[in-house]
Image 1 (cartoon, one colour):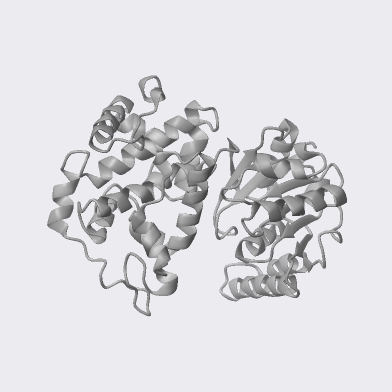
Image 2 (cartoon, one colour):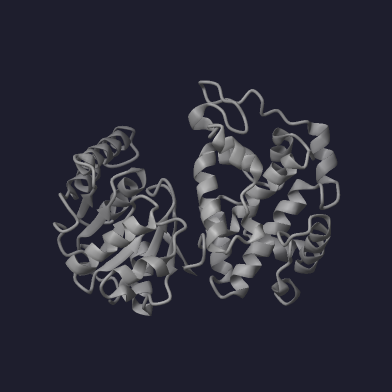
Length: 395
């Protein structure tokens, strides 16, 4: 591996998986100038992805958002490919297939045998371990994570994830490629959930627990959290993401951390999923949704919002949420899994938080956060609210 040169920039890119994420990644790579070859296990899916991307590009051109000639040039770089084995030699192959470890391992076994040693092999997994995927490939040191966020053409952040045996030059090349594609890379170790999906767990979990505890109704909890500058409350956001999708990621992190109580799924969310109330896509989740997407039952009690925001940490949705976000971020940095600047950048770009949790911790005071968590741990013993020892030492 080496620096991204002009020759590398024009080298083919392989994308496995023609769904929304794979199609988006393919568009990003083609926009950057690469010939892109799309493979999908379902017959005709790769061709349909090329057609969808082309139509989207031409629509943007018709709206004046993209030069028409450039739209045609990007589309011309996209090609369906019949199989993984039929891919040409690529600078990188990125998989965006089902989140199933055994299926991914089978794929990387094939890629390791059919792509030259110089090819980066990347997974777009949102929560599975790079260290469990990489050994399936020949020359596993070239395996890394390139975790894009949806939709990839619009979202700037890419988590560049190192496994235990990912070589430094592979990481350097991955970072350089991401930059060359007009994206913003953050680096992290292969920790459960990486940066964004690990640090964000409390944002959802605290709101669900506050509802379970009877502190307030969902609309009021969401309104409280929005007062801190978040564009959406956590409960309405999980309705947008899909309760099933959010629960699956959270459950994966919980299992990978040895069922750490910090990440234990809530009965509140489990019941929503069991009942089929998955959010906007089913018309009902935490809230109900009209045909136009509005939610007639998302109406907060404004007097209660003011009361809760002014209350102590045990019943204050803002204080609880921020304390847990800061604690999670500090722990991640203390373990050496990501740097503080990368954590803050990931959370502001990847989730739209108004501030990064490390910056928030400095503003609130890390010792204040520690004291809040000690109070929460006394009120709700069991380990969820244990403060990171690093809160006493971080500056």
